[in-house]
Image 1 (tube, helix red, strand yellow):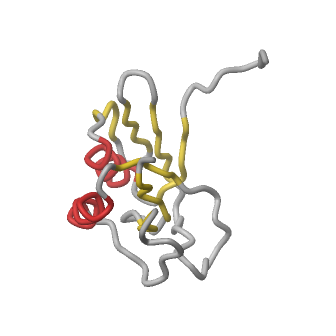
Image 2 (tube, helix red, strand yellow):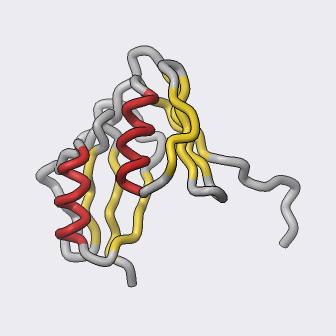
Length: 121
């Protein structure tokens, strides 16, 4: 199937773009390509994530979202316990509700946005 466009990058809303970029840069091992108060970007040479400042933005939380959940990111890992420990050390938090903790873990990034660490099949 041929599309009419190709994905350039993913941009996410954030209260503090530089902090979000720093967190995900460390989580993924990607380089911080740009970092200012209003916009920050990370990348691995083929994929980029951008974070744009939206004053007053806060993540929806989990499991009882205070606002509409706009997205969540899933990341494959080889060892759930080790990856969770490392993500928490980087500033993530772990909500009490975990739907399938033997297969994936829901964590919240420093801005309150949920993301999943998923056991690689």
